[in-house]
Image (cartoon, rainbow, N blue to C red; front, side, top):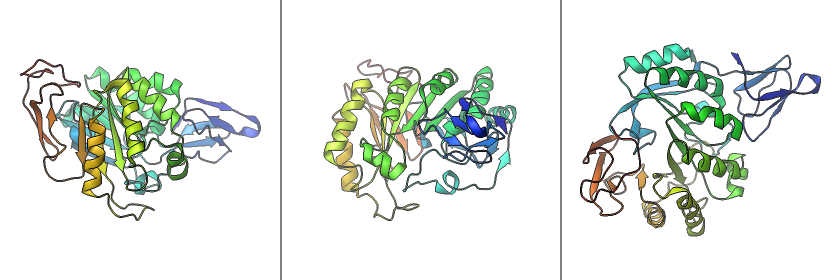
Length: 327
């Protein structure tokens, strides 16, 4: 356990957490909404510090990151808890419950990433931003060892903590869940605007990719999808977009999103964005990276294995510079 950053004491030994837009006011002995921060005698502590629920070596494509060192491996690690309550959560066993945990220090985690011959560490599985102190320390050590650091996040964090964290991050994938305020309020118990503001900030500082889980009848209307990707294109049409297919999970029992709907959303997104990919779907469609100028195949994928057909980051046919970090 470690004293938390970004909080302020209040009367009667309560504290207010300033890490995310919930601004939880926490009584002694209680946790915030995220379950990862606890008030002990009027001081706020990271209850998840160095506590790990999940650890694996993955292809970086699995995060998903398609334009960030494709073909390389990354050490994926997560804790428990989340500052959202998404009713369809795919990882609810660790985001909404407290599973069995192991303790791994920042130094030990960095050493493990080196031993496993990975490009670095991806903080993922549950919401990593609530693991703030641990990530900040680990990422600083990882940089000293020339390792890359990735965050797979819902983007729900306040601006000041994010500004402090960005210098030690190399890549981020943000789960943009919808483009409707009511979706975030009713289904995720959060708000949309802070996520949009943070996407704008992240895009200017680190490698960024976006993931949206497409749920029939919830976030897949033509109007909403058009607005989402029209807005994202104003930031940078080069940002890679991953559209993943919903399957029933946690409290959502809706039927899986149809393949026809996935292709429809894909085609709308392609009107605005240069790189759009389909996840949770078999076959090559929506998996290949092509030059947005001449259409040349540049990266071919088989599940989570990438084969690179270009040198550096330029199309060998027309010379277009391709967005991303490539070995």
